[in-house]
Length: 295
Length: 236
Ligand SMILES: Nc1ncnc2c1ncn2[C@@H]1O[C@H](COP(=O)(O)OP(=O)(O)O)[C@@H](O)[C@H]1O
Ligand SMILES: [Mg+2]
Image 1 (tube, rainbow over the protein chains, first blue to last red):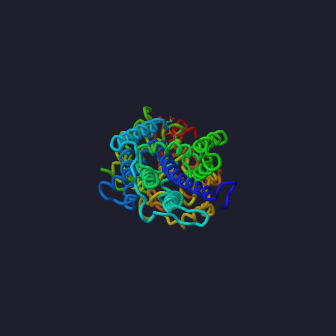
Image 2: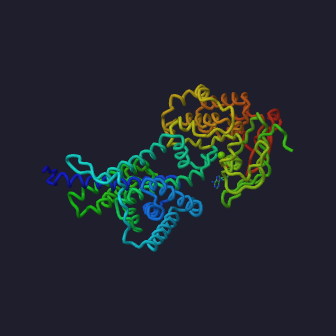
Image 3: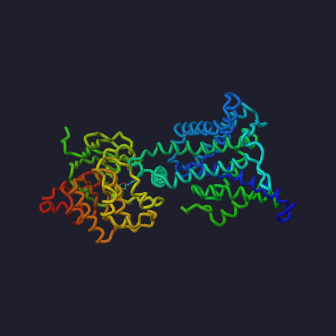
């Protein structure tokens, strides 16, 4: 059996793959946070809870209405997006002019409420969601076995992230979005309905979290706490990448997932802290983050 | 009754930023095809007047009639669609957008906007710098771009805030030519200026603004006889 740095290549590639899977979730979630922060100036602490809600919706859809994985992949993010739009219209819109702290506190409170709600309904032990048939099994790549579902998670996340990047950076709608992020007043004076765009941006940002939640459902245990476990790392990713940078959040998310995976291979003791160590170093060297601009 | 040629009428307009009361009853009108200038010292309230027309200040009272419609209760994004183009004092070029994206950003607000080819003929620099980020343009180029992008939209009323400010004399001259050609094309123009020498030859009428209200109106042919007023308010 071949080895790499004294580690069996199977185990090495397996961890690398797992790192990429985690990185895909980091990327999708931090991308949503970045889009929301850019436009609304709000640090969306409810992001993890809405990711969890995406997974929960998929589970509920399957168990109460017989809605399968593929429909859930479409409907659960839509549902989360609608919840987001309700949150934006009823609460967030009153906070834009205030300090970041208010938005952070409100969304943190919302996260607690959402988590409490699902905890009350389903407990914390975790709900099973089986891998869709199409993705059962693994590909034999010769040097490793690649579980099909992991490959799908990476592919689907990448596609969604790149599509988001493309729309924001390369289309007319994206130009509206960037303009409204940079100078909302003037953009509105040109006749563009900025409040509507802000609302849809929040809806879209949290729908991304919902999408990640559905992707996660078959890969991890669905539990009311799955979001809060993940979101702490995602916030570290956002700090490292630089708040508000689109491409930055995608690249940083994937990169840190990989680094985490590698750390599991070479120095497992540090695997759960390595992201935070990197965060501390980046904050010392480049306080605005790797891709962020100093204000 | 509003006369049919009246494009903009502002009546007893008061505007506030939070608690500060900035406009104290502005009154003026602009007829279709006219070029009117609002002159005044720094802080007189001219920028605020434009912003209040566009719905960008805080609370406001009084009346703004655009094309015969009362717009004081309207959200800002609807007002532009009555055919209004706005060139802000700080130029408002988006740094995160390319020159071309800046130019193409404002949506259509009327028919008969200037075709892009014609705009590039008018402002050849902008075509050369199409792909550059907005932040890379020189001051003069930014001013040209800020003008160009509202000509594309079919706006018939142009609100131009201190377009000659801080620019080299050649560029100011070029801007004066552009304003003249826009007048010939029938645009209605409100020119906010401090630069009397720039504005006077272009304007059909002038209003002098002080402390958030109009203190004098001077027609094109009254310049001689109202010298004293001009001197008193503007020091010219
Ligand atoms: N955003 C704002 N908040 C509070 N006060 C403002 C604001 N903008 C302008 N002002 C005040 O309003 C007054 C009029 O300003 P402005 O309309 O910019 O004058 P002008 O354009 O004639 O130089 C000034 O006293 C200025 O300090
Ligand atoms: Mg001004």
